[in-house]
Length: 275
Image 1 (cartoon, rainbow, N blue to C red):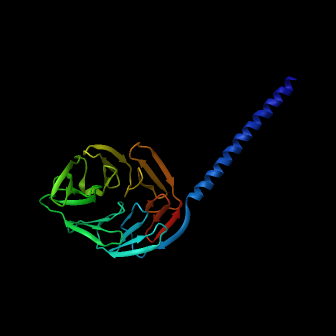
Image 2: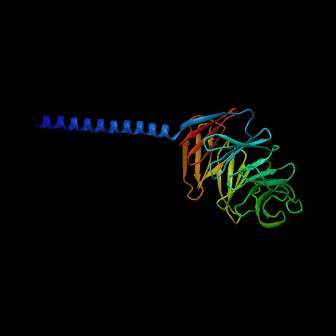
Image 3: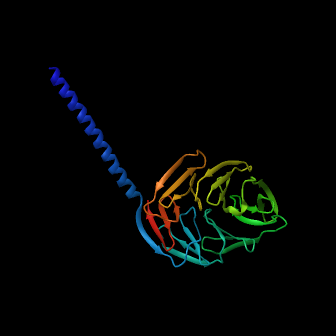
């Protein structure tokens, strides 16, 4: 009887192991199926010039700048409209109601409608901002400008009135700042290939995201995202600081994300994925 009990125990143990292994294999296969379903290739676009700046608005329209041209694509990658825009320039399309273009060579910023009609054009007054280097729109219609002379971020309205100033850390090398964005009452600055500096609405540096080789960042909902490497998108919740990663279906140099579309940009092409 003792022998029979031992045999039964061994059989039961073996059965439990088999069940656990089967469940693990099934969960793994299901995860692969879900991952595949999340990224379905729906189209590709051949590029005749390199994309030097790219953005996506709240409506899911994609904007690509290159070769003195801005192109607007639909959420499924259909080219809808083009306009001439001498480069280099800074493109910011996130608002959805208008595009923001800043040209450092002429110290001017423009607001364009989504169909590229000129709404306004303003030259930054050097009496207000001595040496404007970068600019981006704020949610209230004002503009944030990086003043390389005074080592400050200045929030200006109608080109003259300074609403607010933020003094930058001494460790911040302005020559290495390559991106400036205002989002969800925070200011984000990209320190080339090193880190993202995050300031709150009163100008306090609240977070530094250290990451090597970072070239750009963007936003979706409450998350900031950027390429961690050519195959991985890292998402950072700007309120909870939670981090998640997305494995991309193909390598890229730039990735743009909406709730329904993933655009992977490379030197000669854009791949469009539904998710």
